[in-house]
Image (cartoon, rainbow, N blue to C red; front, top):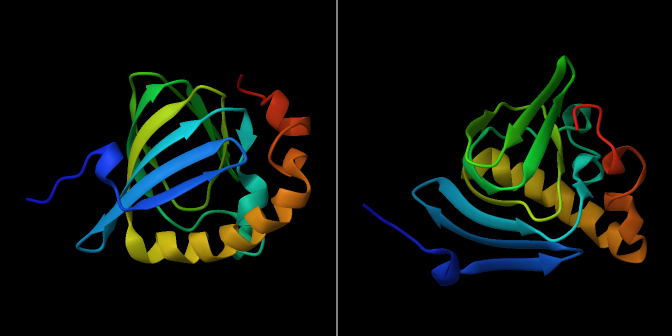
Length: 140
């Protein structure tokens, strides 16, 4: 069975307060993520169906807090909890959050293609991923 550690993962992203290390195995991606600031991920999904992430994710929240937002409500995940985020979500992530997440690579690549374009736009306006609704989610 393949395995990987955070520090051995081949893929890396460290941008706008988000540190992500990831590796793909047999059609699935494992990601180790750390958020150094409050981040509203909704702007990254613009352009996808419903402006939401099409990929499911399974994970463990090591520290911090995530609020998954769906058309029919929100789910709050806190430190120490395992979670399933169904397709069709956005998310708000608190500063200091660390997680390990597993996703099918196909739908994740679809989300990644859109989010990279949106992330480039956020480089000129870092507040695009914070402030406003992100600073005080309804479920906080």
